[in-house]
Length: 345
Image (cartoon, rainbow, N blue to C red; front, side):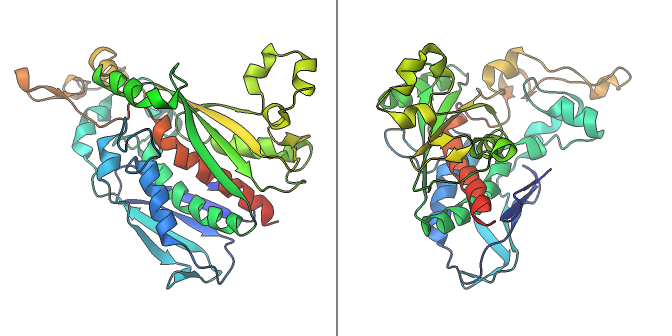
């Protein structure tokens, strides 16, 4: 499905190399002045054009992400920057798509991507950059999530995410050098994004199937490349004894701000782990994808992700060295969409 929420409802549409990506946001109250500068800032952070120090802008991200203008066109629901209370529809045009880089994928599957599963399930797929499975789709989530964040700020709720680990490196001061080395080697690396939600009152979330952490996990695991979710002490807590956990002075570290699926009034803390980008110079050079089923004309079979002849051959396609860098803005956006939906009941 492409829709999230029951009362504050967001629907995403568009493909990576289609004319545009966009969304429809329903449930926004009338009379709210939208801070367009804030939306611009969140889109720049998602693209890698702006990023908190010490990581420089553009570090480890796809060149396409840096070049896309990401100008939001408001189609409905907003007049002179103020919401009308009607469905808000918007698009972000794809202006720097290079579909020719993906012509070889018409008859091939990349490893670590959704190419094969989409083809097998639907009998058709958009091979141009991965279609809906591309991280380009998350631009619309960031726009909708930014609107949600603005509504939450009026309630005193603040959401802040940051990159806390890249590969095995946990020192933010070394992220720059670490990612640069991976990139020079033609490879990619994963990372962990931590998110802290402050200002939540006691009582957000419902027991059993509507627990707060369940909603957050559902939203985070929908982000492309997210491979795991934990909150509070998470997986590291398995190494602690019960007395060490529950007699700790740092209650938030242990509980994550949630007890019984309900917020306890302390900061909610969770983390998401993101995989290394499946496509990089090394995988494209050495790990050739599987061709389509037998019977496909030989002229149509996979010839490799290179274009040109002889010494002019080159790897095509633009890829992130560390997708976790740009995931920070998406994690914040998805958390905001979840919380605003809960508050809209």
